[in-house]
Image (cartoon, rainbow, N blue to C red; front, top):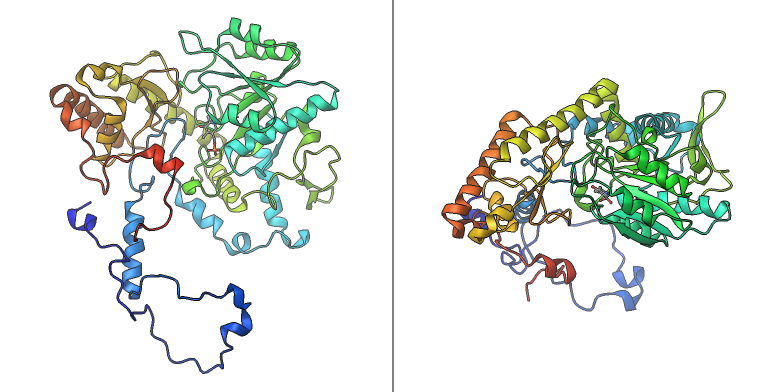
Length: 488
Ligand SMILES: *Cc1c(COP(=O)(O)O)cnc(C)c1O
């Protein structure tokens, strides 16, 4: 970004009394006064303090703001545990077909058979991909899927007259796991990882018991490592009467290669806005479908799409033991359409190739960076890997400084300080959608920053230099956000 863009005046500074954004002929339809249309106590006594500007000023203001945003369409975004892969534009085209984009959730079933078939097929595709017996498409995010899955686990235990209150999570788990367990009314029990970064079986054996509702796990785990003893882990939990929950938010390493259902899991959620290339949308619409094994099918949220004997599709609203509806209407339909388009575009072999390339890219990057950054868990990683910036501390440089310096080179920084069990953690997930040139460019930049840290640490510590703002107080921004313009 150039200096002049930084200095662009705020829209409020351009305001000039009486200036308007449009000029239209005088309206010849008689107008009723506002007092007749709106109760007087709701009327403003003074006009809103909005900037008075030309239309072109408004357009430039918003266009400029949009250019300050960073997204996967701007550049490389190797955010670990988040799969910021490129969103193919064919998905967008399909989602905009009028027959899909302009239907209404309350339309009669016979008029939306195509949409219902799409949802039904997607349910089945995701069930096949994860090795589950049925899938609900309702949850709107990964964490929402976790909560939905845990509510089903709860209903299952209650239906058997068992009072199980504890959910076990490893210390490397994603923060949403214990949070969802808590919101679903469980107590969480954290178990440590071994020195190899895997689940400690002895700690697991000691933690399970008659109060265990479930173990939540992601495999490959948050360190990018595959839990080799997964079948033994499943046995330990099942023997104690608990269920296994698979956090499949990032399934980029396993598609077409292995399935949570075959590993012994009973429930799985997927993040379509990660693995299936649908946009993350700035906290906007996502989709966290949940798949379950037969024993949990009766508890699925309702309604589910079903196929009738005459090959028509309809909503099943019967489901007597359902945990109920977890989302208005039927989930984020437009996102589900994009994921459907993605799956159809690639097909089974293509999805497997996606995973193979995601894993290859991560390993390539890890091996090239290994001489410059500490790799706490060497060996083969899956779709992501962690490094430690601990070695730079001797120069007074921390992982946060490396992340900030990357901004100067046009990269979105990787995930930092997560997972919590690695000191000065840097977690990188390159994804399969990047070229070798892009991977090399990022690697070379990371190497350059490691050298800068040694030779000229001040340069790294004071970065970034090219962004609109430099170092923000992110904690205060999150805890005490100021959401209106600081124009007073
Ligand atoms: C992203 C992620 C989640 C949460 O998904 P949201 O859609 O952000 O709620 C859960 N678990 C893991 C491992 C994740 O990476």
